[in-house]
Image 1: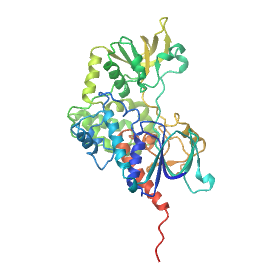
Image 2: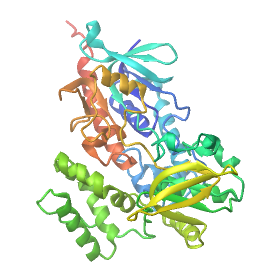
Image 3: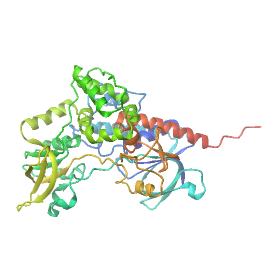
Image 4: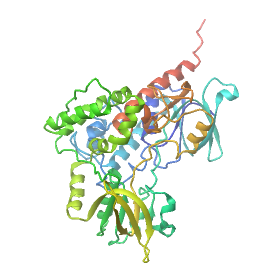
Length: 466
Protein backbone atom coordinates (compact mmCIF):
# COMPACT_ATOMS: atom_id res chain seq x y z
CA UNK A 1 0.00 0.00 0.00
CA UNK A 2 1.14 3.56 -0.68
CA UNK A 3 0.42 6.25 1.92
CA UNK A 4 0.51 9.99 1.53
CA UNK A 5 2.59 10.31 4.73
CA UNK A 6 4.65 7.90 6.81
CA UNK A 7 5.95 8.78 10.26
CA UNK A 8 8.77 6.52 11.39
CA UNK A 9 9.01 6.43 15.17
CA UNK A 10 6.86 5.97 18.26
CA UNK A 11 8.00 8.58 20.79
CA UNK A 12 6.83 12.10 21.56
CA UNK A 13 8.00 13.49 18.19
CA UNK A 14 5.89 10.88 16.40
CA UNK A 15 2.74 11.60 18.39
CA UNK A 16 3.14 15.37 17.96
CA UNK A 17 3.54 14.90 14.21
CA UNK A 18 0.52 12.58 14.02
CA UNK A 19 -1.68 15.07 15.86
CA UNK A 20 -0.63 17.92 13.61
CA UNK A 21 -1.08 15.91 10.42
CA UNK A 22 -4.59 15.05 11.60
CA UNK A 23 -5.25 18.77 11.87
CA UNK A 24 -3.74 19.79 8.54
CA UNK A 25 -4.40 16.92 6.11
CA UNK A 26 -7.73 16.52 4.30
CA UNK A 27 -9.94 13.49 5.04
CA UNK A 28 -8.91 11.89 1.75
CA UNK A 29 -5.26 11.60 2.87
CA UNK A 30 -3.64 8.55 4.47
CA UNK A 31 -1.01 8.29 7.21
CA UNK A 32 1.11 5.35 8.36
CA UNK A 33 2.81 5.49 11.73
CA UNK A 34 5.57 2.88 11.97
CA UNK A 35 6.97 2.01 15.38
CA UNK A 36 7.50 -1.00 17.62
CA UNK A 37 6.97 0.67 21.02
CA UNK A 38 3.75 -0.68 22.59
CA UNK A 39 3.22 2.58 24.49
CA UNK A 40 3.02 4.71 21.35
CA UNK A 41 3.76 8.35 22.06
CA UNK A 42 4.50 7.75 25.72
CA UNK A 43 7.86 6.06 25.31
CA UNK A 44 9.92 5.09 28.33
CA UNK A 45 9.85 8.56 29.87
CA UNK A 46 6.07 8.93 30.07
CA UNK A 47 5.11 5.35 30.99
CA UNK A 48 6.58 5.61 34.48
CA UNK A 49 4.06 5.57 37.35
CA UNK A 50 6.48 6.69 40.08
CA UNK A 51 5.19 9.97 41.52
CA UNK A 52 8.67 11.50 41.87
CA UNK A 53 9.38 11.05 38.16
CA UNK A 54 8.39 14.60 37.31
CA UNK A 55 8.49 16.69 34.18
CA UNK A 56 11.42 19.08 34.09
CA UNK A 57 9.30 21.81 32.48
CA UNK A 58 6.33 23.54 34.18
CA UNK A 59 2.89 22.26 33.18
CA UNK A 60 1.93 25.49 31.40
CA UNK A 61 4.66 24.92 28.82
CA UNK A 62 3.86 21.26 28.13
CA UNK A 63 0.81 21.43 25.89
CA UNK A 64 1.39 19.34 22.78
CA UNK A 65 0.07 22.29 20.73
CA UNK A 66 2.12 25.53 20.81
CA UNK A 67 -0.97 27.67 20.19
CA UNK A 68 -2.94 26.15 23.09
CA UNK A 69 -0.73 26.64 26.15
CA UNK A 70 -3.44 25.69 28.66
CA UNK A 71 -4.29 22.35 27.05
CA UNK A 72 -2.28 20.14 29.43
CA UNK A 73 -3.20 22.17 32.52
CA UNK A 74 -6.89 21.98 31.58
CA UNK A 75 -6.60 18.21 31.06
CA UNK A 76 -5.14 17.82 34.57
CA UNK A 77 -7.88 19.94 36.13
CA UNK A 78 -10.64 18.01 34.37
CA UNK A 79 -9.29 14.87 36.03
CA UNK A 80 -9.33 16.31 39.52
CA UNK A 81 -5.65 17.22 39.58
CA UNK A 82 -5.67 20.99 40.00
CA UNK A 83 -2.28 22.49 39.30
CA UNK A 84 -0.78 25.92 38.95
CA UNK A 85 0.84 26.86 35.67
CA UNK A 86 4.31 26.64 37.17
CA UNK A 87 3.80 23.25 38.86
CA UNK A 88 5.77 20.21 37.72
CA UNK A 89 3.34 17.43 36.88
CA UNK A 90 4.21 13.74 36.91
CA UNK A 91 5.58 12.19 33.74
CA UNK A 92 3.01 9.39 34.03
CA UNK A 93 0.18 11.92 33.87
CA UNK A 94 1.78 13.51 30.83
CA UNK A 95 1.82 10.14 29.09
CA UNK A 96 -1.91 9.72 29.80
CA UNK A 97 -2.53 13.23 28.46
CA UNK A 98 -0.80 12.31 25.19
CA UNK A 99 -2.85 9.11 24.97
CA UNK A 100 -6.13 10.92 25.57
CA UNK A 101 -5.30 13.77 23.19
CA UNK A 102 -4.51 11.34 20.39
CA UNK A 103 -7.69 9.36 21.06
CA UNK A 104 -9.78 12.54 20.90
CA UNK A 105 -8.29 13.47 17.53
CA UNK A 106 -8.83 9.96 16.15
CA UNK A 107 -12.49 9.80 17.19
CA UNK A 108 -14.12 11.79 14.33
CA UNK A 109 -13.30 9.19 11.66
CA UNK A 110 -15.36 10.73 8.86
CA UNK A 111 -13.69 14.15 9.04
CA UNK A 112 -10.04 13.20 9.40
CA UNK A 113 -7.29 11.53 7.41
CA UNK A 114 -7.01 7.76 7.69
CA UNK A 115 -4.30 6.61 10.12
CA UNK A 116 -2.80 3.13 10.32
CA UNK A 117 -0.59 2.37 13.32
CA UNK A 118 1.82 -0.35 12.23
CA UNK A 119 3.53 -2.13 15.12
CA UNK A 120 6.82 -3.02 13.47
CA UNK A 121 10.33 -1.71 13.00
CA UNK A 122 11.47 -0.37 9.64
CA UNK A 123 14.80 -2.03 8.88
CA UNK A 124 15.56 -0.88 5.34
CA UNK A 125 14.16 1.20 2.51
CA UNK A 126 14.66 2.18 -1.10
CA UNK A 127 13.85 5.44 -2.84
CA UNK A 128 10.70 5.28 -4.95
CA UNK A 129 12.66 7.08 -7.68
CA UNK A 130 14.48 3.79 -8.24
CA UNK A 131 11.16 2.30 -9.36
CA UNK A 132 10.14 5.25 -11.51
CA UNK A 133 8.10 7.37 -9.08
CA UNK A 134 8.83 11.04 -8.43
CA UNK A 135 9.50 10.89 -4.70
CA UNK A 136 8.97 8.92 -1.51
CA UNK A 137 10.33 5.76 0.05
CA UNK A 138 9.41 2.09 0.23
CA UNK A 139 10.07 0.51 3.63
CA UNK A 140 10.82 -3.10 4.53
CA UNK A 141 9.51 -3.94 8.00
CA UNK A 142 10.69 -6.58 10.44
CA UNK A 143 7.26 -8.26 10.30
CA UNK A 144 7.89 -9.13 6.65
CA UNK A 145 5.62 -6.50 5.13
CA UNK A 146 6.43 -3.62 2.77
CA UNK A 147 4.83 -0.19 2.51
CA UNK A 148 5.44 2.97 0.52
CA UNK A 149 4.89 6.64 1.29
CA UNK A 150 5.28 9.75 -0.83
CA UNK A 151 6.22 11.93 2.15
CA UNK A 152 8.23 10.59 5.10
CA UNK A 153 9.17 12.06 8.47
CA UNK A 154 11.92 10.33 10.45
CA UNK A 155 11.20 10.69 14.17
CA UNK A 156 13.35 7.93 15.62
CA UNK A 157 14.97 9.72 18.53
CA UNK A 158 18.25 8.41 19.86
CA UNK A 159 19.48 5.31 21.65
CA UNK A 160 20.90 4.76 25.12
CA UNK A 161 24.54 5.77 25.50
CA UNK A 162 27.05 3.03 26.17
CA UNK A 163 28.99 2.51 29.39
CA UNK A 164 31.92 4.93 29.75
CA UNK A 165 34.50 2.12 29.59
CA UNK A 166 35.35 -0.39 26.84
CA UNK A 167 33.72 -3.78 27.25
CA UNK A 168 37.09 -5.52 27.43
CA UNK A 169 37.88 -3.56 30.60
CA UNK A 170 34.82 -4.91 32.41
CA UNK A 171 35.09 -8.31 34.06
CA UNK A 172 32.95 -10.79 32.11
CA UNK A 173 31.62 -12.30 35.32
CA UNK A 174 29.82 -9.01 36.16
CA UNK A 175 27.32 -9.25 33.29
CA UNK A 176 24.34 -10.11 35.48
CA UNK A 177 25.14 -7.20 37.81
CA UNK A 178 25.47 -4.63 35.02
CA UNK A 179 22.39 -2.62 34.02
CA UNK A 180 22.98 -1.19 30.54
CA UNK A 181 19.48 0.31 30.18
CA UNK A 182 18.11 1.43 33.58
CA UNK A 183 14.65 2.16 32.18
CA UNK A 184 14.03 -1.55 31.99
CA UNK A 185 12.96 -1.27 35.58
CA UNK A 186 12.98 -4.98 36.36
CA UNK A 187 16.50 -4.60 37.73
CA UNK A 188 15.19 -2.63 40.73
CA UNK A 189 13.37 -5.67 42.11
CA UNK A 190 16.61 -7.69 42.13
CA UNK A 191 18.54 -5.24 44.30
CA UNK A 192 18.97 -6.22 47.94
CA UNK A 193 18.22 -3.54 50.50
CA UNK A 194 21.84 -3.11 51.58
CA UNK A 195 23.52 -3.55 48.20
CA UNK A 196 25.96 -0.84 47.15
CA UNK A 197 25.32 0.69 43.75
CA UNK A 198 27.68 2.31 41.25
CA UNK A 199 25.88 4.70 38.90
CA UNK A 200 27.73 6.02 35.84
CA UNK A 201 26.44 9.46 34.92
CA UNK A 202 25.28 12.28 37.20
CA UNK A 203 22.41 13.85 35.25
CA UNK A 204 18.63 13.64 35.27
CA UNK A 205 18.48 9.88 34.65
CA UNK A 206 20.70 9.27 37.66
CA UNK A 207 18.41 11.27 39.96
CA UNK A 208 15.37 9.36 38.66
CA UNK A 209 16.97 5.99 39.30
CA UNK A 210 18.38 6.84 42.73
CA UNK A 211 15.00 8.10 43.96
CA UNK A 212 13.30 5.00 42.52
CA UNK A 213 15.72 2.82 44.46
CA UNK A 214 15.19 4.64 47.73
CA UNK A 215 11.40 4.59 47.32
CA UNK A 216 11.60 0.80 47.26
CA UNK A 217 13.37 0.70 50.62
CA UNK A 218 16.97 0.51 49.46
CA UNK A 219 19.37 1.47 52.28
CA UNK A 220 22.78 0.87 50.71
CA UNK A 221 25.26 3.46 49.58
CA UNK A 222 25.16 4.82 46.04
CA UNK A 223 28.36 5.89 44.29
CA UNK A 224 27.77 8.27 41.38
CA UNK A 225 30.68 8.63 38.97
CA UNK A 226 30.92 11.04 36.05
CA UNK A 227 33.79 12.86 34.37
CA UNK A 228 33.06 16.19 36.05
CA UNK A 229 30.80 15.21 38.94
CA UNK A 230 28.21 17.84 38.01
CA UNK A 231 24.61 17.40 39.21
CA UNK A 232 21.57 19.25 37.75
CA UNK A 233 20.42 22.40 39.52
CA UNK A 234 16.85 22.82 40.76
CA UNK A 235 14.08 25.00 39.43
CA UNK A 236 13.08 27.68 41.96
CA UNK A 237 9.87 27.37 43.94
CA UNK A 238 8.68 30.56 42.29
CA UNK A 239 9.91 31.15 38.77
CA UNK A 240 11.55 34.59 38.35
CA UNK A 241 10.66 36.71 35.30
CA UNK A 242 12.82 35.83 32.31
CA UNK A 243 15.48 38.35 31.36
CA UNK A 244 16.57 38.40 27.72
CA UNK A 245 20.37 38.51 27.86
CA UNK A 246 22.34 41.08 25.89
CA UNK A 247 24.69 39.10 23.67
CA UNK A 248 27.89 40.47 22.12
CA UNK A 249 28.33 40.66 18.36
CA UNK A 250 31.21 38.19 18.61
CA UNK A 251 30.31 34.58 17.94
CA UNK A 252 33.30 33.24 19.83
CA UNK A 253 32.14 30.84 22.53
CA UNK A 254 34.47 32.42 25.09
CA UNK A 255 32.93 35.90 24.50
CA UNK A 256 29.38 34.59 24.63
CA UNK A 257 29.94 32.64 27.83
CA UNK A 258 31.70 35.60 29.44
CA UNK A 259 28.71 37.85 28.69
CA UNK A 260 26.16 35.29 29.92
CA UNK A 261 28.14 34.59 33.08
CA UNK A 262 28.38 38.31 33.92
CA UNK A 263 24.65 38.87 33.41
CA UNK A 264 23.74 35.76 35.41
CA UNK A 265 25.90 36.92 38.33
CA UNK A 266 24.29 40.36 38.22
CA UNK A 267 20.72 39.03 38.16
CA UNK A 268 18.72 38.40 41.31
CA UNK A 269 18.36 34.78 40.16
CA UNK A 270 20.69 33.42 37.48
CA UNK A 271 17.89 31.20 36.18
CA UNK A 272 16.03 34.24 34.86
CA UNK A 273 18.88 34.81 32.39
CA UNK A 274 18.88 31.18 31.26
CA UNK A 275 15.11 31.29 30.78
CA UNK A 276 15.43 34.52 28.82
CA UNK A 277 18.03 32.92 26.57
CA UNK A 278 15.78 30.03 25.61
CA UNK A 279 13.89 31.76 22.76
CA UNK A 280 17.24 32.75 21.25
CA UNK A 281 19.04 29.43 21.65
CA UNK A 282 18.34 27.87 18.25
CA UNK A 283 19.16 31.07 16.35
CA UNK A 284 22.31 31.52 18.43
CA UNK A 285 23.43 27.95 17.72
CA UNK A 286 22.83 28.43 13.99
CA UNK A 287 24.92 31.60 14.02
CA UNK A 288 27.99 29.69 15.26
CA UNK A 289 30.45 28.21 12.80
CA UNK A 290 31.54 24.58 13.04
CA UNK A 291 34.63 25.34 15.10
CA UNK A 292 32.70 27.29 17.74
CA UNK A 293 29.98 24.63 17.95
CA UNK A 294 32.68 22.02 18.47
CA UNK A 295 34.32 24.12 21.19
CA UNK A 296 31.00 24.43 22.97
CA UNK A 297 30.47 20.66 22.91
CA UNK A 298 34.01 19.94 24.15
CA UNK A 299 34.28 22.51 26.89
CA UNK A 300 30.95 24.02 27.90
CA UNK A 301 28.19 21.48 27.31
CA UNK A 302 28.34 19.71 30.74
CA UNK A 303 27.98 23.02 32.57
CA UNK A 304 25.28 24.14 30.15
CA UNK A 305 23.33 20.94 30.77
CA UNK A 306 23.20 21.12 34.57
CA UNK A 307 22.11 24.77 34.46
CA UNK A 308 19.75 24.44 31.52
CA UNK A 309 18.08 21.08 32.26
CA UNK A 310 16.95 21.51 35.85
CA UNK A 311 14.84 19.36 38.17
CA UNK A 312 11.62 20.05 40.06
CA UNK A 313 12.38 21.71 43.42
CA UNK A 314 10.88 19.00 45.67
CA UNK A 315 12.69 16.28 43.71
CA UNK A 316 15.96 18.15 44.13
CA UNK A 317 15.36 18.53 47.86
CA UNK A 318 14.94 14.77 48.29
CA UNK A 319 18.11 14.11 46.34
CA UNK A 320 20.02 16.76 48.28
CA UNK A 321 19.02 15.07 51.54
CA UNK A 322 20.65 11.86 50.30
CA UNK A 323 23.82 13.77 49.43
CA UNK A 324 23.89 15.53 52.81
CA UNK A 325 23.40 12.23 54.64
CA UNK A 326 26.27 10.61 52.73
CA UNK A 327 23.94 7.96 51.31
CA UNK A 328 24.84 9.19 47.82
CA UNK A 329 28.42 10.16 47.06
CA UNK A 330 29.36 11.87 43.78
CA UNK A 331 32.81 11.18 42.33
CA UNK A 332 34.46 13.09 39.47
CA UNK A 333 36.84 11.07 37.32
CA UNK A 334 37.51 8.73 34.43
CA UNK A 335 36.79 5.00 34.65
CA UNK A 336 39.84 2.84 34.08
CA UNK A 337 38.67 -0.71 34.76
CA UNK A 338 35.84 -2.63 36.42
CA UNK A 339 37.21 -5.85 37.89
CA UNK A 340 35.57 -8.55 39.99
CA UNK A 341 36.58 -9.08 43.60
CA UNK A 342 36.97 -12.54 45.16
CA UNK A 343 33.46 -12.15 46.55
CA UNK A 344 32.03 -11.32 43.12
CA UNK A 345 31.54 -7.60 43.67
CA UNK A 346 32.52 -4.97 41.11
CA UNK A 347 35.78 -3.13 41.83
CA UNK A 348 35.65 0.24 40.08
CA UNK A 349 38.97 1.98 39.46
CA UNK A 350 38.95 5.55 38.18
CA UNK A 351 41.38 8.40 37.74
CA UNK A 352 40.30 11.36 39.81
CA UNK A 353 39.55 14.51 37.84
CA UNK A 354 42.43 16.98 37.84
CA UNK A 355 44.80 14.45 39.40
CA UNK A 356 46.81 11.42 38.35
CA UNK A 357 45.80 9.34 41.35
CA UNK A 358 43.69 6.20 40.95
CA UNK A 359 40.78 5.82 43.37
CA UNK A 360 38.77 2.66 44.00
CA UNK A 361 35.42 1.66 45.41
CA UNK A 362 33.37 -1.55 45.35
CA UNK A 363 29.72 -2.05 44.42
CA UNK A 364 27.23 -4.85 43.98
CA UNK A 365 25.64 -3.27 40.90
CA UNK A 366 26.81 -1.22 37.92
CA UNK A 367 24.07 1.01 36.48
CA UNK A 368 24.44 2.99 33.26
CA UNK A 369 22.81 6.41 33.61
CA UNK A 370 24.96 8.24 31.07
CA UNK A 371 21.84 9.30 29.19
CA UNK A 372 21.26 9.22 25.47
CA UNK A 373 23.86 8.71 22.79
CA UNK A 374 24.94 11.81 20.95
CA UNK A 375 24.73 10.52 17.37
CA UNK A 376 21.30 9.35 16.27
CA UNK A 377 22.38 6.76 13.70
CA UNK A 378 24.32 4.06 15.52
CA UNK A 379 21.25 2.60 17.27
CA UNK A 380 19.10 2.32 14.14
CA UNK A 381 19.53 -0.31 11.40
CA UNK A 382 17.20 1.77 9.21
CA UNK A 383 19.30 4.92 9.47
CA UNK A 384 22.49 2.99 8.90
CA UNK A 385 20.96 1.45 5.75
CA UNK A 386 19.82 4.88 4.56
CA UNK A 387 23.29 6.29 5.07
CA UNK A 388 24.81 3.44 3.08
CA UNK A 389 22.42 4.22 0.21
CA UNK A 390 23.35 7.94 0.36
CA UNK A 391 19.83 8.92 1.40
CA UNK A 392 20.99 10.69 4.57
CA UNK A 393 24.23 12.07 5.97
CA UNK A 394 25.50 12.39 9.52
CA UNK A 395 25.74 16.04 10.51
CA UNK A 396 29.34 17.32 10.91
CA UNK A 397 29.30 17.10 14.72
CA UNK A 398 27.63 13.68 14.75
CA UNK A 399 24.68 14.96 16.75
CA UNK A 400 22.20 13.34 14.37
CA UNK A 401 21.50 13.62 10.65
CA UNK A 402 21.94 16.62 8.35
CA UNK A 403 18.80 18.71 7.77
CA UNK A 404 18.17 22.25 6.56
CA UNK A 405 16.41 25.05 8.46
CA UNK A 406 13.02 23.57 7.44
CA UNK A 407 13.88 20.10 8.84
CA UNK A 408 14.21 18.69 5.32
CA UNK A 409 16.74 15.86 5.16
CA UNK A 410 19.92 16.53 3.20
CA UNK A 411 21.78 14.04 1.02
CA UNK A 412 25.57 13.65 1.43
CA UNK A 413 26.09 16.23 -1.34
CA UNK A 414 24.00 18.79 0.59
CA UNK A 415 20.96 18.62 -1.69
CA UNK A 416 17.45 18.42 -0.23
CA UNK A 417 15.83 14.98 -0.37
CA UNK A 418 12.31 15.57 -1.81
CA UNK A 419 9.54 14.57 0.56
CA UNK A 420 11.88 13.49 3.36
CA UNK A 421 11.90 15.26 6.74
CA UNK A 422 13.29 14.58 10.20
CA UNK A 423 12.07 15.71 13.63
CA UNK A 424 13.20 15.65 17.23
CA UNK A 425 16.62 14.71 18.54
CA UNK A 426 17.80 13.56 15.09
CA UNK A 427 17.94 17.21 14.05
CA UNK A 428 20.12 18.48 16.91
CA UNK A 429 22.98 19.34 14.57
CA UNK A 430 20.79 22.04 12.97
CA UNK A 431 18.68 23.12 15.96
CA UNK A 432 20.61 22.01 19.10
CA UNK A 433 17.73 22.59 21.55
CA UNK A 434 15.35 20.02 20.09
CA UNK A 435 14.98 17.31 22.74
CA UNK A 436 12.32 18.86 25.01
CA UNK A 437 8.58 19.12 24.41
CA UNK A 438 8.44 22.96 24.04
CA UNK A 439 10.88 22.80 21.12
CA UNK A 440 9.74 19.58 19.44
CA UNK A 441 6.07 20.61 19.39
CA UNK A 442 6.93 23.76 17.41
CA UNK A 443 9.01 21.77 14.95
CA UNK A 444 6.28 19.13 14.60
CA UNK A 445 3.68 21.76 13.74
CA UNK A 446 5.93 23.42 11.15
CA UNK A 447 6.93 20.12 9.51
CA UNK A 448 3.36 18.82 9.40
CA UNK A 449 2.04 22.07 7.95
CA UNK A 450 4.69 22.19 5.23
CA UNK A 451 4.40 18.49 4.36
CA UNK A 452 0.59 18.67 4.35
CA UNK A 453 0.75 21.50 1.82
CA UNK A 454 2.90 19.28 -0.40
CA UNK A 455 0.43 16.40 -0.05
CA UNK A 456 -2.51 18.59 -1.04
CA UNK A 457 -0.67 19.90 -4.08
CA UNK A 458 -0.19 16.31 -5.26
CA UNK A 459 -3.81 15.37 -4.86
CA UNK A 460 -5.97 15.38 -8.01
CA UNK A 461 -8.33 18.31 -8.24
CA UNK A 462 -12.02 17.55 -8.87
CA UNK A 463 -13.05 18.04 -12.46
CA UNK A 464 -15.08 21.17 -13.22
CA UNK A 465 -18.67 20.60 -14.19
CA UNK A 466 -19.63 21.66 -17.72
